[in-house]
Image: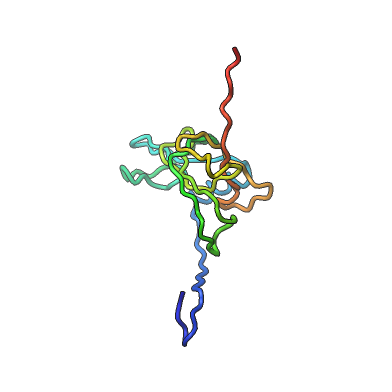
Length: 153
């Protein structure tokens, strides 16, 4: 809250920025192809998602693009109970840190189609894309649990 001449008002800051060429390619791939692209460092071989232009580990510029799996493993999560104006989901909802197949880093995103009491670290999840996509990270609507396939006897 900001105090303005005896009144308490919520502080709303609107700003915009250019995504740049690397982040733009990542976002356009989500929008146009429903594919998750990452960049691979030629120096250390690490695969970064979301894509980055340079490796924070060895400082190499990254120019190699790779597609990573829309499926991954939930590394950790939190359940959000406090509503904020920036939220795109009704509370309570879960945010997860997800390591996608083929990536060395993780992505933070909302979890959906899941009982909040049954979320577990290590569970398999899969990206669900929005029908209408705009070219931002919310083109992935959420990640939902993937049911384990049973082996036939």
